[in-house]
Figure 1 (tube, rainbow, N blue to C red):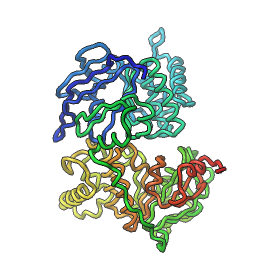
Figure 2 (cartoon, one colour; figure 1 turned 30 degrees about the horizontal axis):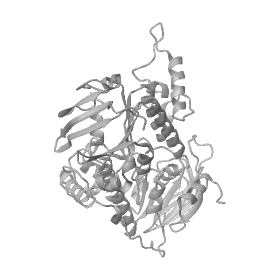
Figure 3 (tube, rainbow, N blue to C red; figure 1 turned 120 degrees about the vertical axis):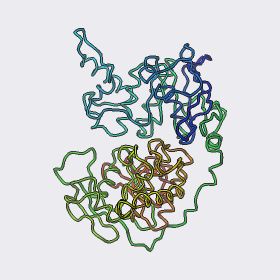
Figure 4 (tube, rainbow, N blue to C red; figure 1 turned 60 degrees about the horizontal axis):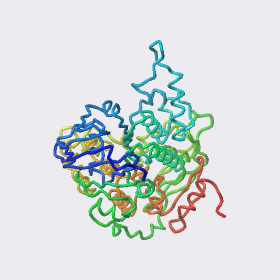
Length: 515
């Protein structure tokens, strides 16, 4: 660690209360110049709330902040924090889709030419340099809405770099990144350290913390638990400090999936229709099946076509050709025109999307409203709906252990792990025969991850065909009975649970033969 001993940031006695929740209670936190300081804890521990206070989004109920030589500074809003030299990349992206990459990077801060107009040439050229820093070779004039989620995350990082800040907060920055993009980000962090900029790194990925961080602070239930030197602790010690218990005993007895079951889902020769609107990934002659009681994982590199395949099965990707059958009933034969998501739901297919906040949940609505959203027809007449929905929502909150003050709490105020459980409850209520979950534990803590794994496994053993899409290879190896590896829109290989290793999956995903 190349940092001096005078902290650039001191937060002392920070407290914050929301209705029914004490989010932070007298938390102390400090960061040194040139330091990568990891901030960890379970979802709901208070990490994001603490950083929202630092960045001016929230005002604390108590405590004070010293930053870069100024005592007891108060940031009225995010712009004030930015002017002081604080940049933050939140887990939730804050980009404007129709605007270009350059316009997003310099939103509200466009360079002005000598005649008082925006100097677009300078803005585009500076954006190109910033994109190169994070490993992106794209036209800065491209609309952000045409980028993939992981590309959008890198634009957020480039936007933070454009501020030339003294302290940068990265909240789960690699959750949507490929391995190559993650390497580029780590190189950027090292450069920031060299110029004595400080980095607060929030992540649930232990390997990243031990690779990058100098120190780590643990929060639990809104309270400071410990600040440790990374060189003097271990992943197991951190996990135990975070969750208050050992997770080693939380593995489940897999048993063998039923082998005598006929396929619940059959996909044959699924391809994109020739001449259809160009997409990022074209599906090519995909065939596979999933039996009742089985968990099948779709693995592969970014851009392999996993999400596109899920959307095609769910009826949200039009203009495909091939056969899709659920429980022996043909859902699509030939062209997909005329088929819609409602047909898939009626046939027994559920789908948890990759981005739960953009495509899966109504964030401002209550837990109860979200759980019932895909099943309103089953609740009968309007004047009895509310009581029936409340009863069902309460049952799911208890069975899935959703941590909330009540079923009327808005979903936006829940932690990431609890939001994911609400989304899972929404589709369990449909009673699916086939459940597709896309990146089910992205951005959730280690405790919630183990719980979600168990829920998916138990659901499969009750007779549901479960498909898990994951970029987290340890997760794939944990949950899958079989692994289908995709590359360039095709299935490049299949591995049983016993055959599957990270090395074999990577070889199939990159289409490199094992020597």
